[in-house]
Length: 146
Length: 146
DNA sequence: GAATATTAGTTGTTTTTGTAACTAACAAGG
DNA sequence: CCTTGTTAGTTACAAAAACAACTAATATTC
Image 1 (cartoon, protein in one colour):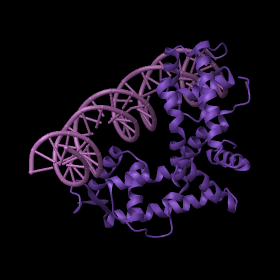
Image 2 (cartoon, rainbow over the protein chains, first blue to last red):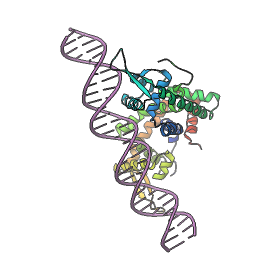
Image 3 (tube, rainbow over the protein chains, first blue to last red):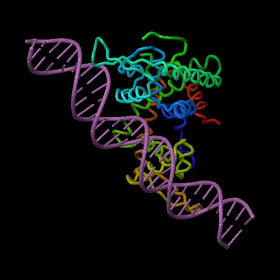
Image 4 (cartoon, chains in turn yellow, cyan, green, blue):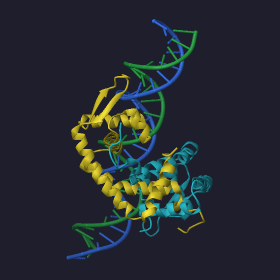
């Protein structure tokens, strides 16, 4: 098991990004999964609704860059648990306007607090400017600024 | 859909990391998936063997922070395609020493070239020092330096 | 040196995801 | 209007991942 040459997997950006993403999701995931029984796409939907108020499945999908079937299933499950309400849109009766129920709001508030604390904790690993730079670079890589 | 308050999902590190990871994996994934029919864990195994020579499944799993069942199945498929050979270990007859076959070496070399080029291309989005800093921060988040 | 615990790796079963095909509503052009 | 095309969302089926239980070999301990 001797090293061959220059290129190192440990410096390959997609690999590093995956490892960092997985690792950094772990602790937070344990909370929304174990404590609230939510899947990742589910809390993403919750966060979008919690932050932006009412949205349609399509809008969430676009913003979260998530496929519509994933959103569809997440929405069903969240509706079953009464975390969100679905109302057929007036303008376009194909679409549904989604919104958190009071119970959903509660869960969102709690998760949000945990997320904020967790984010701050991760941030403590970096110096003042580094965190901002990191986020900027990640947004660029994710294509969020385009 | 009006914004509520300060916390922004688009700045939440685990979220950003996931988006960036997914996005940056996409193009490269298309290559190893469509062109070589490999799964992500499979090329990871290939890369580890290509870079470090001989390894056991366990060693790969530890280094790649990947569960042993995933490794096991990846190894089976790679062995079926004759990309790697499995030799029962002398010291410990539970373990197998894995190594790329010549044909596996070829695939590895090609994929490695593509990976390097792709990595360089991603890097072009950043200034000289930024790329190094980014990798350093990601390694820290991934717990690779511990 | 048997009895017990641990480890390397596999296999089976259940969830979750990805992909394609579908329904129902809307839009545009003639 | 009425055909043709597009869009929002769902459903069905196939692929992949997660988790648990297993086999076989090795360590440990009394």
